[in-house]
Image (cartoon, rainbow, N blue to C red; front, side):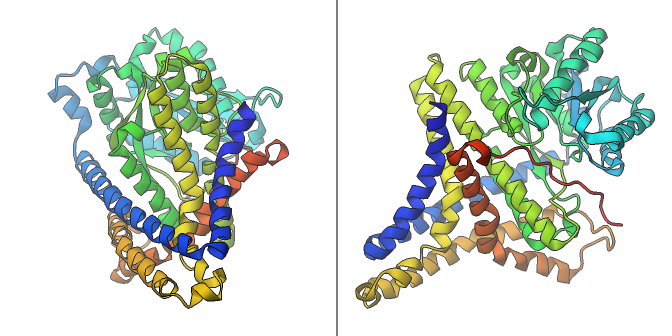
Length: 495
């Protein structure tokens, strides 16, 4: 049964693309009508998502102006009982990157005596990784309520290399050596899992605590910030910037639709429930999103993701050269698209868990199938198949009125859809930090950063649709074609 679920997404995506290719040759009129309707659908969806984007952006902007730690007192919330447990999985990241993260933790507006920190290292990280961890301990080890370094030794038989196995091991050890000896009830501890280059916004732990204390049934919830990939944004190629902002905007849109929201990258969960489900699965790559489905299964669908409408800051993909950065971007997108394993996991427990309603199963099945197939096919349909009937549709079709009007109609719809792209370009300017070497952005840089959004069609095809299709194809083929965990290269900013 598992193998069937692995085949479905890739088979469906390839069926859609190959069927459209065949019909563009045999039934070009049918494909032309379909393309016009599909483009119109995406235009309307773009408008729909635009309002969600603006709503979330405005709410995030407003939340960033609030002193959330102060608000905990003004709202008479019993926040003093709440502690935070920050988990930082580490592999071979440079000392400067890790140190910047710890400096950021010291700068957040929250008492450090309410924070436990775990630096979860890997034995495969080598001597340099161990030295980095020890230097961090020497400089920051006494700054928090508790600090611990763990070293995970990968078991290649029962574990997959990646953050999930490292985090699960590290938190188990931390429970035994740091959390339980503290005597603090675990129901009062919130776990936040960050990549080791992630910087929490100044008020992150304040708004997280506020959300935890005001959310109905907080122990049945994950808490999701908005990842903003701007820490090194001026040092990466254009396509990396575009994909980074696109990811941020997608997460902003999802925050306005919490019924569809799934944990991604940095996120926070209650420790008591994390212990109850047995931590992260150690045999998967996409542990950040799959942990949501683990909770969802364990608690029989009584689990949700609460949007925080507040940022965490991360690095965009880097490389020694532009070409290397683009290759790394492709690998990162392919790894994210490997989240298709969440579909396999969800379908497998849907088949077994009789306490989850059929309606709920149908909803999530549709959302997962629609999301992954759209990821792999929509850019091709919008930007490629709109011209294909005129290329291979035959002489009879070429002389038809439909052939003449097809590129004009689709062109008008796509141009109308650029409204969303134009809006995104201006919002992206608002998210840019001060330039590290120039301070306030020069007018010509602003013009360039807006104009670069014209590359979105090409960028989406080569750095979104194709890696997603490859990931699904690898899952379809199975065996040696399956992907393992790929560590995104980290670097410090240029001075």
